Amino acid sequence: MISRLIDRILGPRRPQVEIAEQQYLYRAPRNLFISAATALALSIMLPYWELKLIAPQFPQGLRVRAWVNRLEGDVHELEGLNHYIGIPSFEDGAVLERSIAIAGILVLTGLLLAGVYINSRWVMVFVGPAVLFPLIFLADLQFWLWKYGHSLDPRAPLSGAVGEFTPHIFGPGMIAQFDTLAWPGFGFMLAVLAAVLTAYGLIAHRRAYRPLVTVASGEEAVEQAATEVLV
Figure (cartoon, rainbow, N blue to C red):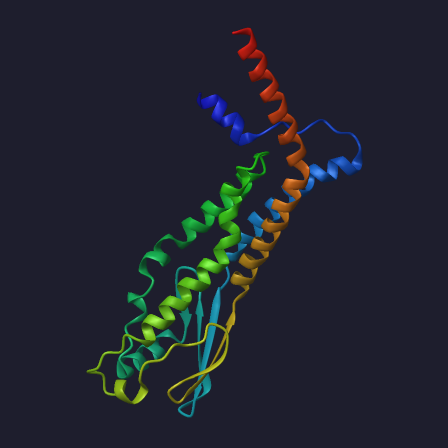
């Protein structure tokens, strides 16, 4: 029973082809999945999001870079401003996400590599999460930006003057007297690249293996019918 399930997940074996065009047909999804896994793994080492704030008292601007598991840059200065505005500490935000981010991305990378050996429609279960990952990251980032801007401590000296706000994920914006500019980091760009490569890999996978799955399903149906007749 278990072996039959494994066979269904792995799908039909790739035929031994000699024609160069057919070889490319079967290598295309493999190469795309491996490239996507490489891009996603490398994204861990680069920032995913960056924000710059400029105000009269900070003419050079304050800049913060967000990796998947930490913040760097002028974090100390911003924490001091947060105290007066009433914004919660950065240490209190996205604790769960930061704690599992690297492990989660490595799991996605492993699933992409496992997808190289899946020749059935189950490949979507293995590699599909990599396509959704950038969208999930943006949704989570937007949630925390909104939450920070709507969790002002009313006892803070300047909370009433600032009022509730929601920083922009990308592009220019304004928070009180601060002009802000946010843009995606190179890590996020690599994650998007991985998602695009994975999507193309799924298309190439379908083109290569769907005919084999159809043939295998027909042979299985014939075999089952013959068994029923003999019984």
